[in-house]
Image (cartoon, rainbow, N blue to C red; front, side):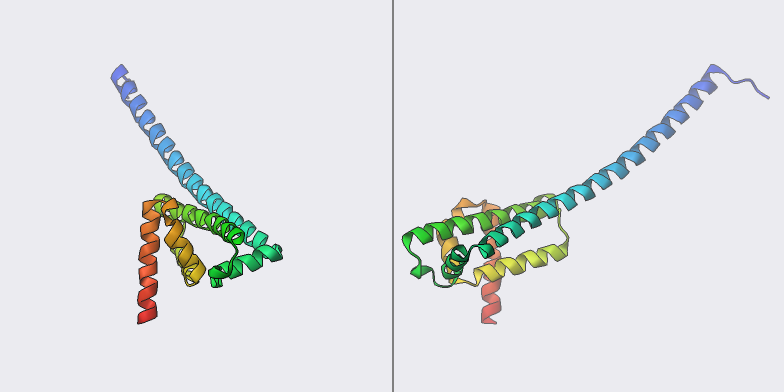
Length: 163
């Protein structure tokens, strides 16, 4: 049997270091994947919670619920004060929707099925005259990319209505 030289021991050391590096990289890849999944879950939970809380507040307050319904269906019947309250309410809803949209598009945090649900919610909102009026007067408060998305979605909605 041949005696190991310093060079042989160095080669063995390099090999062991390479294996340790590979094992570390595999471990880190698993951790990143796990953290990404957790982050996506937390983001989905947080946005769903925020949306639910807002919907609950509207539903639990009869006056707010009535004002919201009137603002969506017959916005011209709102008083000046209720128009301001309605705009603030829709500002909150649209800011939340924009946040969800950013999370989906910038960070790819939602599945395609959530995008379909998201589009359904948006289209349902924009079928009402009050939301259409709101958007025409207040859309500049949102990012250009989000406005473009809404405008494209609204164009699709118009195409669906005419076809």
